[in-house]
Length: 256
Ligand SMILES: [Fe+2]
Image (cartoon, rainbow, N blue to C red; front, side):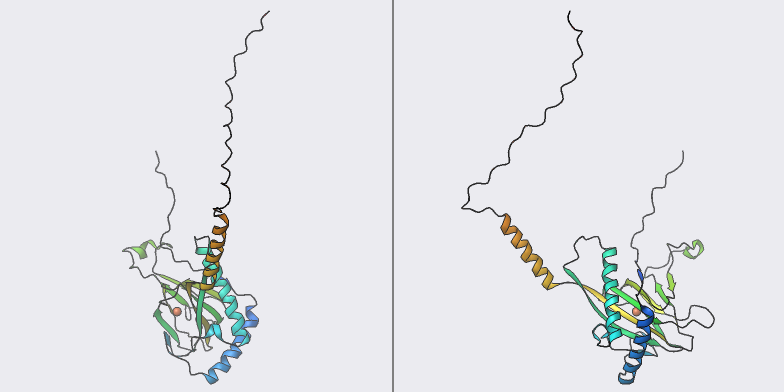
């Protein structure tokens, strides 16, 4: 007798939804010009980036047309990603609160391992990804499992049990991931700059929608409350249970 395999449960998975942004070639060309203008005027800041330019955290609110258009499209994808992972049927009272920034990594630029505390989703959008001269992983994003590696994991080489996952998305790609998932960016070895947009999205209750939902619920509840002045509502009509089918009588032989 053989043992029976039922199913492989995948628990504590890290969903990493990936999107291609519509019309990304035009948007990328336009946004590169806008970023070049911003760099003339803005000093930038240092976070996880080593060398290069990191803009202020105002990507979502920027007035430049391509910034604005891209921010809208990214937020649409984040809303879609939330629907895809959610069990809850009602997400309409929630909203995504996003911020974002531009990362420019020149030759040798990279981002040290980090996560994005305080957010639900994080995302990286790829504007410009110069190919590594040696075809290797330079410029790639690498996700790091924060659980310690299993002894013997490397020998088994299972796709379900590994500590690193490397991706090198093409321009126009949006990679979304849980914000607590650690990651880093390999040094850019190309001569051209690597340009990406990073996004953080918090999940919050939308006060306006929540108020609206409460008002609606109260309204519906009032409609169904009995009016004390009205005559008592008719009780549900009693109906007889359907007759059971009588057992078929044995046919008696016809009497002569
Ligand atoms: Fe990051």
